[in-house]
Image 1: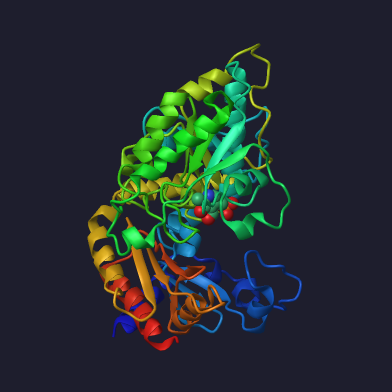
Image 2 (image 1 turned 90 degrees about the vertical axis):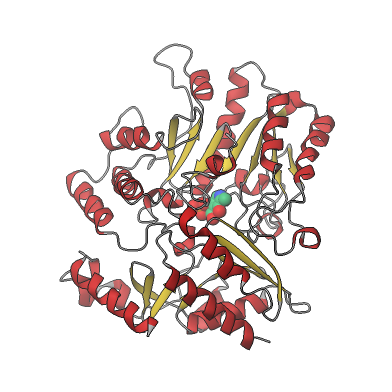
Length: 467
Ligand SMILES: Cc1ncc(COP(=O)(O)O)c(C=O)c1O
């Protein structure tokens, strides 16, 4: 009954919303052809396994994808933590169309276009503290590398050029650039790629199933792990340390929620030693925890925030780095005709991405979606923890509209059991995501209680059937 009424909703949306698949090109649309899979080297994918049994999406609307077989698939992960507003928002489509029709591109170096300035001005109305300047990028990875470079250059401009060390954290994910994988702490993302950046050190991660299994929200054990930063400072000396970068909630390593007091302690230690604190908010930004950024949720203001994903609702690639006024002002020195930061991308502040960002921001503001998660977080938490006694479940972690369900790994085959659950859910019309043996969930912020029920009951059935 539930699926039936949902299908009806999709059909209605598809009839009224302006959609690519409704254009005269429909019959020739790439999205509806069954492609030859040979040439495309897919990212973060088991290529041979996938190509033997592909899962191909063809359209999306609201909370649902439709796959190439014509089946509706509930989106339990907002695409890849990015489609926060739900799919196929007509306002974003229209804004993108209007912008590409008016001006497809203009160079961002020594030249500007109004939408970039407007988007920057509007975004900083939602940032915490004095983070009132924005540098645009095209992805989370670029945002991270940009933030690390800004941190290094900032100290140098202040005459503290010895501050070159960067501190990340075990299990951290900061994208796939060399900077990001160096400060990141996911072993498979690092071990194939040489010696990486020098001068990097790592805090211990905060995942501890023995102490914190089945915590609801922030675990109470683990604040003291932030004190390890003092040991790192003692080892290297503060005069050599530029910045600490952490995800407020680690996503890719399997949903690791910060212990109560942990982020505040990091902030205090950074302040004590003149170290910049960078929050990588690529997944926690744009309403995921019930506030525009995790910084507001945890009441800890970093010096730099990196973001991407929800910024344009995933419709057009874009990232943004927010920096404090103090950092920006430090760069604004020397002769007026000097370029202050030798960094930027051909597509920084791309007009079409800005149009998508502005349209997305209109929706976040109009529908109060930066705060909506506070209304449903309790229901979400209960639904996630209802899986506690299911087979194979080792831990459940949640915060805002994020949940991680950690399974016992099969002997000698890490990740295999969770991936079987993923395949079973997909068969039953629900898209989840797995990272190792953790099912990581992060649906669009517009999910309703019926859809939350569908998501968790499908996972529950899958857990009953995998061995
Ligand atoms: C915390 C964090 N930082 C950076 C990134 C990298 O973003 P992108 O894939 O857009 O480069 C991600 C992607 O999931 C992320 O979760």
